Image 1 (cartoon, rainbow, N blue to C red):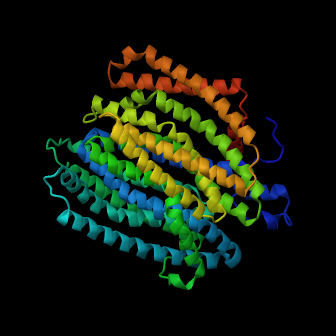
Image 2: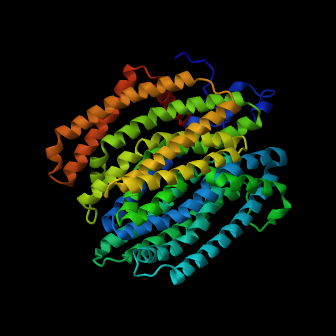
Image 3: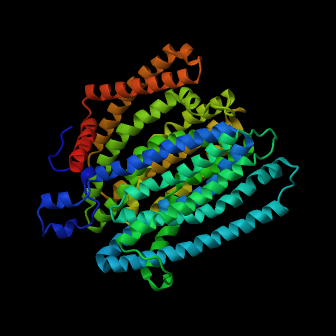
Amino acid sequence: MAEMPEPSPIDSPVDSSDAAEKRGPKREERSSARPNLLRSAGVVGAFTGLSRILGLVRTALMGSLFGTSLTMSAFALAFRVPNLFRRLFGEGALSAAFVPVFIEARKERGEAGAWDLAARVFCLLAVFLTVITALLQIGITLIMWYGPEPTSELGGRLLVAAPLIRLLLPYMVFICLVALCMGMLNSHNRFALPAATPCVLNLIWISVLGFLVWRGRTHVDPGLDPRVFYVAIGIVVAGIVQLMIQFPLLRSLGFRFRWREPGKDPAVKRIFYLLLPAALGASITQVNVMIDSMLAYWIGDYAAAALYFSERLIYLPLGLFATALGTVLLPTFSAQAADLDPGAMGRTITRSLRTLLFVMIPSAIGLGVLAVPIVRMIFEWNAFSDTSVGQVAMALQFYAPGLIVFALAKVFVPAFYGMQDTKTPVKIAACCVLLNLVLNLIFIRTWPEGTKHAGIALATVLAETVYVVVLVFVLRRRIRIEGWRGVFASWGRCLVAGLVMALCAWAVVRGLGSFMEKGKVAQVIVTLCAVLVGVLSYLAATLALRSPELGEVLGAVRRRGRGRS
């Protein structure tokens, strides 16, 4: 595929001053003054990857303590509640609504005016989230008092999960305010601290779990394991710490934490006007996952826990690159839209798609083929039995294809929000949430016992696929997106290379299957060997197919290394 000699859109700047600079400094000076998109994504990806790895450690410890028990399922459901609000009013929708308006305010009002706007939004969000938390606390308490009888199956499950939900709700306030602070920093091209912030949660969580493992007590009663409350308290403390560490860097950039009357600034109303419809559109995956968890919690003690553990494995490759790239793309699209340059947006989209496909297709294939050995290697400890391995691996195999569409959404949704269009994604999302619910009910009704949770995973993937397809169809009518032939060619090359990778990795596991039965060390060695052989075979296949994406990624890494030197 022929490439134009000009810099690629993936290397386009995050700054929004292109139009003015065309009349000013030379192009080389502008290029050196502004951060490279792929390099910024690399910084975010590195810290996000570290967070995902720490997250796997914490998840492995959770599995070791609780397995796929009712306690673990109750925790998985309870932790979804603050996480859902984090997606609704935090990272996804708030960033989509706040970042474009904040960048525009910096251009029109200057730094002081933009920081005044940020302070007003911070105050209003803090009050709003506190009220929501109080109302939810009252509602859950009333349900516990006047809800189903504790002797019924529904009432018994509710009484297990409700105390955990109440305990974890304050985390919602802190983590949403953290997301707002991260949006401020990202708007100033400060990506490292926001990307490193989730590591704080994981480190505190791991410390609590390590203490519980060190105590070595086991829970034998069928009810709620009281050790899970220590975990919940640690999560709330981590939310407070995550918020506090944002302030020093924000202060150095000009932000001052003081009460500001929100209603006096029309830009605040504009942000929240964009925020409310964006809430569902930016969090379609999380809304579907919340529905999955609620339904899974009722079909079996194990189901919600099995989905939780399988999702942790999906989020590792998703966070390593797709989430990082999506974080950097939002201010990029906002700047390109502000400069009235839809052509640049289209080129950025196609180059981002090619890069994502190069990473996500082999990741999805690898997780599907190596689901059982990977789950055994990471989670099979103490309370995590062989039965738990089978339950989690089955869900992972059905989730794995969705890794591709989950990643594609990280490109197309920010394109709409960069144009300050939050209504279109929310309309599409509402239909897809309904589709997900219908598919869930159909699969739960028709699939045999022990596989219903896998049907829930498949429903999420199908609904997300429809969501992405419709987004692409609508976006192509808004802006001209060039290079689709190259995207589909890249898709084909990656698919062929991924199949070669799958065959080689499967051959390693098949050939050394008897050795894996010798213990945990043998499991780790064989699984890592299969992963390594798979990666090397994929790279060799892409070289043989002359995939330009490999050279682009390696070139970006080399340029980043020279920049550091």
